[in-house]
Length: 272
Ligand code: NAP
Image 1 (cartoon, rainbow, N blue to C red):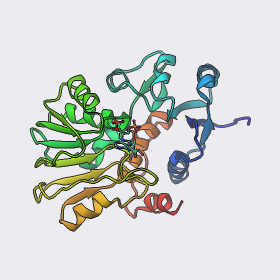
Image 2: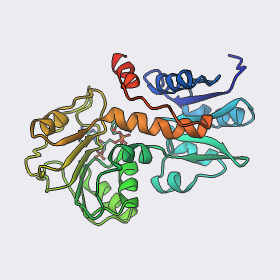
Image 3: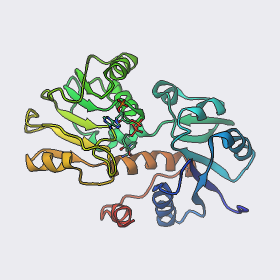
């Protein structure tokens, strides 16, 4: 396809499931920006060629990166950036000062919905130790939280992540009881449609705890339903999805996404 106007993309293999085009094109239309955001299927063996070709295209504003390229793409940019390097995975590539730079907007996207919560020194529980958990732990390390308990199937992997991000805490298996915490985050795939359920007793959480599930399919996970049932504050996975896209949008198109007080974008995402 010949491009005549500025564009950004999301690349991955597979890529048809991505909700990023809907989000970015919604904001472009709202702001009246004459640009386009599209999905591009890039196989692992085509990644180097893709970056080389786009780098030379003056209309290309950058791309979001999803599985399986989040780690391998770092080797193809000029500057991995502090965030991408620390997390060890990138989800956004953009131009900056004549260089191709990568970053990981998942950390900022995760943090945006809980930015007003006072979590400094507070105990935290994180479920999972995969790519999403890395972004979560990076963000938590930046705000100086208290001890972090990571529950994961692979306990050694969870221990290594705590060390990597300089967090105090401990790693436990998934069947360990949940300690009291100010924030509990599910950053594992458990509870996602087609995956095993997340079996967790959250009765130990205090009444002012926040329960945050990164899973957004389904949006109302059993974990969030249980938290709501106890009257706890909840944050769902769409908030992070929109938050990480907002940071990338500004890097690509130089404008902040518009406010959406009526939740029209959320409604559109839920309708697909
Ligand atoms: P990942 O790197 O593949 O990590 C998956 C995690 O889930 C690992 O901790 C893994 O445990 C655990 N897990 C998977 N299957 C399991 C099973 N059968 N039993 C026990 N543990 C299991 O995936 P990811 O990229 O971190 O994504 C995790 C979730 O976050 C997904 O649901 C994804 O959609 C969601 N996510 C949401 C957003 C958002 O914007 N809302 C952004 C990123 C990711 P082991 O370490 O033991 O293998």
